[in-house]
Image (tube, rainbow, N blue to C red; front, side, top):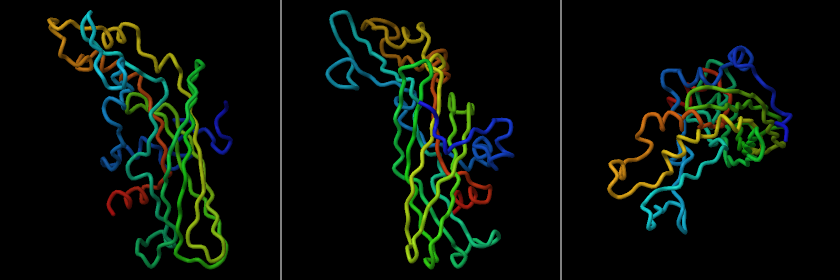
Length: 248
């Protein structure tokens, strides 16, 4: 399965020049972005399983332990402050009188094919837009990005695309759909066997580490972090647009 044709790749070294502001720039802009997080267990790709329902501790005659269920598919989310965009008629004005178009990214969902050596994830989303002047038909192109992060901070790839929202004459609201795709190497997203053994091995009640979370081990936590990927999708904002979202 190939990535969506509507997207074009941006080399990491040229992301800032080619796309305006790369995701890593936004992440470092005075802490204005706090990325959306899933619950700790899900963010690490680990859940408890083994009994009738997910989340139960396995207890049998041989002792107690957990089974780690982990997927190589990246978690998908929208970083804070990048799910909305506000466009003004004047580049220097931020008043309601000069408000032109507002849009929000909604209904983000994803599918993942992890059967091959390269795991492919595709995210889809809707863009709901509203304009202040409803006279005449109009098309508005809104840029968006998709970035793959490894270990919560390392940018592996970035893509930039556009969503075109078409307003009919007299129409105030309109909606369009977009999608983004990403590949992750299965080997990079797979935990080493020794780390999996530390997480999943059964612990007897008398063991010194019987009640210790395996992720408390720095080696285990670091390995899980290295093998954890995220596909982040949001509007490609200018520095002023990002600042506006963070301070409004």
